[in-house]
Amino acid sequence: MVGSNLGELRGQLLVQCQPGQAKNAARVASAHGAGLVLTGHTPRPVVRALREHGFTGPILCDANRYSGRRRSTALAGVRAEWTAEQHDLGLTAVTDSGYLAEHDWAGLRRILSEASRQPGEVIAQLPLAARWFEHSVDGLVAELNHFGVPVAVAIEHAKDPFSVRYLIRGFLSLLAADVPVLLLRADVSAIAASFHGAHAAAIGTTVALRHVYPRGGPGTPRLPSIAAFVPRLLDYRPLTTLATQTPPGWSCDCPECAGRPLVTLARSPRPEATAFRHSLSAQLTLHAQLRNRPAPIAGWHELCATALAEHRTLAETLPDWHTPTNLRAWYQLTRDAVPDGVFHQDERAHG
Image (cartoon, rainbow, N blue to C red; front, top):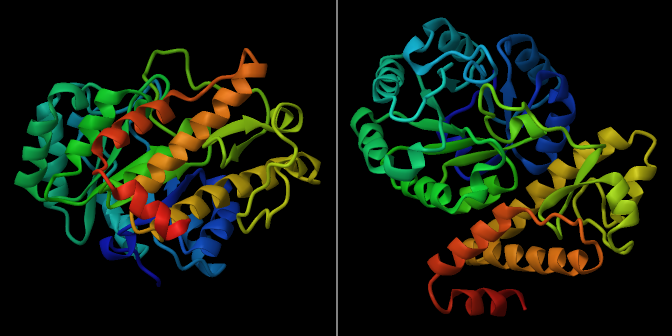
């Protein structure tokens, strides 16, 4: 059976999906040489079906014990049978960790300690409250270095964790740990994370899979209609918006669209499936394009700058237009971080 290992995952932009989306997600991931993160507590039948149908990319399994109103806490520990099942499927195992509330050092050490004692290749999942990234990152890095276990981070936030500058700064500091750090349950910020030192990062296929929502809050927001990722905006927009509020000439060069205007997504016989495949393919295409540039971080900064300019133009005529705050946060931080001259070097190479 084809396996997964940390070497295969290095530099990957993964697709995090629900089991029912796995077939469509695997089709897109295969076209880009990417892997999957399956979110659910019964991965065996899905993994076997994917392998039987020829999917050879890496697969990780997220048990998702840390989310929802009845979520487990980190002190519940990790289950050996869960990691054993993944190894039996030929996969690198991801622990089924519970939620790590702010300052839950005992829970953190229990997850890392139990993960370090599991046989085979194991990644400790750390579903972290956002406030871990405010004042506790140095201690968090010290614990990771002490136990020496690769980790996969998922971040709790009511809206978007990467819209908050302190959190981005803290996350980038976490990437300085001596162990591989993966990011799960993200949106387009997964692309940025992969070029700032994350071992791998996963883009969620639904709003619910793009970060961890706080327990007891208003719940996962739902988009008003079928939405699609717009490369020029680095954001999702409803298909109705693409048809009425964005320039009709906007097109997409991902393999699913092959240069067609984005407005054609709404005219597809199955617009939801078409938008789903386009959105994944477009983000994987962006990732590949940046990876091939001599200065990917500078390229990401330029993408943010261009997208923010597009949003400003649209907001001039559409007063209710929403500009995603994560782009502003990434733009500011990458502007501060990229050395002088890198942008010009990158522009000459692609001018």
